[in-house]
Length: 324
Image (cartoon, rainbow, N blue to C red; front, side, top):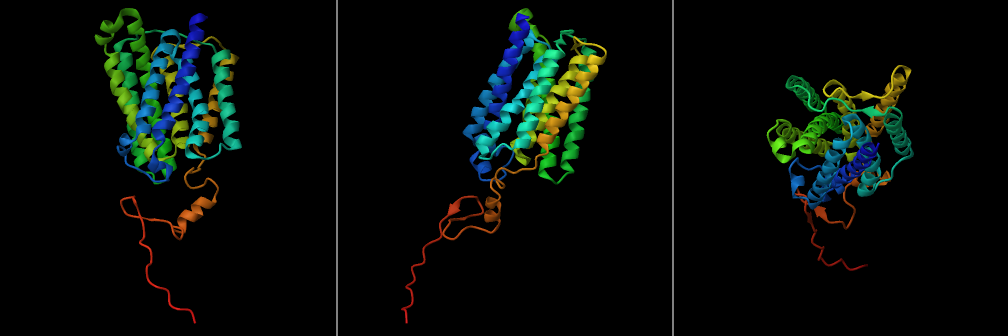
């Protein structure tokens, strides 16, 4: 019981850190003014590096939680990062969290409570055979490739962000699976045992792919579109990986499993509803900002050059004609 509570607290710390780090990485001066930027221009932002440091702290908390708890338990709790990310993202972008978002956010949190407390996820096999790892990784690569192709065929930024968020969430599920393997190896034999096994090298590759996909989703959509898609995909795929690869399950059976299945469906629906909130914080804060921007610059405001830097219009020094 003590190890379970340790896993729960560490998973909560991971969820909070990842949410704050995600919002900070999404923030930049250009995005705050409603402009899109390239995939790598964000690397020059101090907010991105601050968010990366916070996210790495969340990753450490997640690894520690996976030492004491099952993959299903930890990843189900980390979905609460969505609950933290929505108000933080609203604060950063200067918009208000709507009543609909609050409602579905509470529904999502309730589903997590049911899955963790009522379902009581149990542990499984710590180190499965290599062929199970190979099949699981091949399936993950196939899913990510299909999602990338579909996202390129879409024009709407919101839908592209949604698909890229799902791809990133899938990759993060594999990061969690490999992190559990590395954490268990470290707990058993220290750094030497970790360095002589394949999980740590697969973890590095999966982490790079996951972060790249997440940054791609941020480049085409708002944080309240990409983050929910990624956040709900990660625990769902993690649940499947925990069951298929590690042999984890819940401490309930029979009709109680039907209740957990219904809870999982409601959790997915709640997050999809949040992901499809087609609100652009930069242009629809009050409804008037968008119309002001579409009508051009206001009189007396500095014009903007093609490079994005403001240029002041020289004052008119001509003498006014004499009044008659």
